[in-house]
Length: 393
Image (cartoon, rainbow, N blue to C red; front, side, top):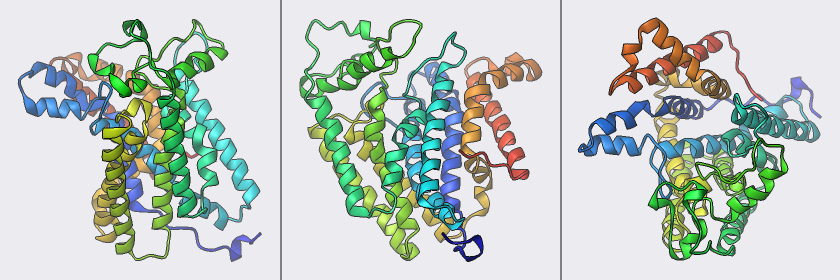
């Protein structure tokens, strides 16, 4: 094991990665900017309807900008892994110590996710669809792919896609007597027909698994379905997204020129888009809430191209000054995520107390409330940044 004095220099932070992470977390903390409320007041406006679609979750199939938040976050977890692994190696940590940290990080992520899911419930709620638990459940497997080469990593993506698709496709479709309303289905868009009925909301392979698995834990009442249609086993196909991020991170750490790295990102995004178009029109629907393989490829294409734009404009062209408000948040993504989950309601309530309830009422009250929450959370991150406090797991 090398001593610190003989270790290689610590890898330089990628400003585009911090900026993209910051933008993602701020978008998440915006709660959709209250656009749904504004769109409701303008039912005939195609402009507000477009904004509403991109600031709220799709009912089932497809998804706009809002549904890209989780893929972006998971992609960036994978992208950051080669950099953090290299940093720990440079600090003199051997493979055993790095693996112990991987196990610890996975455990903490799952524990935090369960804690946030529980909220103020009378007893722990063992749900595993929170983004932190999803990352934690797959994190050890992802770490095992670091440095394994693109062939093995692509092979892993292929196995994950085929296995997750087959598990749904080979499970019998729910019969015609199924009471979908009893399964929490509120929109006809959530009930598919033909072969795609294998991916109906709360009537699919992963939903059946959760009806068994989640009832193994102590619970106030038996688990029947998740209101949003999210499932524990989503972490398996979401590893496709994180592995794409891992491959992108290793591409950026390679000895290629900046132009070659950018070209790789653009080509990878194009390949993902083609795969999404083929799979999403033939073998399985594009559903974010089940993280179908077609969704993994579709969202992967979007995230790769958006990050490529950030990388080109910030790191290649050198336009970094404007990124400061985003970097402040991106360097403390866990801090703002936890702060938002735990304090957003309190921030809104105190805003009404000190700024007046009238500011947050009416058609545009939700927008004002979102700006208030974002301002407080950004100030918190800036306070941490000034003191060089960066919360990591």
